Amino acid sequence: MVKPTTGAPVMAESGSTATYLNKRYQQQYAYNAETTYVAGEFYWQVERGQKTFNRDFASGVVAAAFKLDAKKDMFKRGDALPVSAASGLGCGTIILIIIVVIIIILLIILSTCSRGGSSSGYRSTGGSYGGYSSGGGHK
Image 1 (tube, one colour):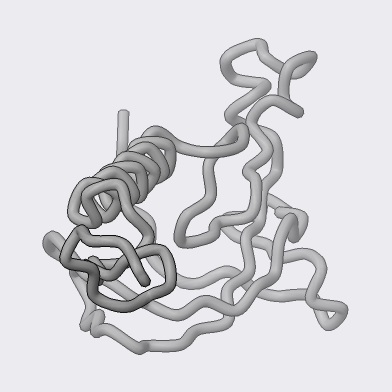
Image 2 (cartoon, rainbow, N blue to C red):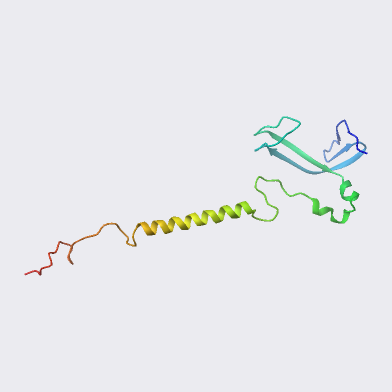
């Protein structure tokens, strides 16, 4: 049976533990956060640019309830960053890199084609000495 709870946790003076409904919780993480994007429905006011200091507490109850005590390290979270991925680059980053490389290659090909294969756009009609030649020899 599920029932709603009321009240708030009581923090220890050290700040490293909190007690709620006679259960002690250990602080796992403490970090600053800033809201950069809001989507969905919240039961409190949330707005872009909002800054908070957060503390995460845990007691290991869920891992024990599912008989996962031996695997509880798997459930530890990594740092929450705007573009973090669990292991290296994400798919979106890889696709963006590929698109940028293709655009660079196309620009190089187009700039080479527009030059017509020569290093300058000026063509001289002069003879071997740089002047105009009518085809006749010098006397």
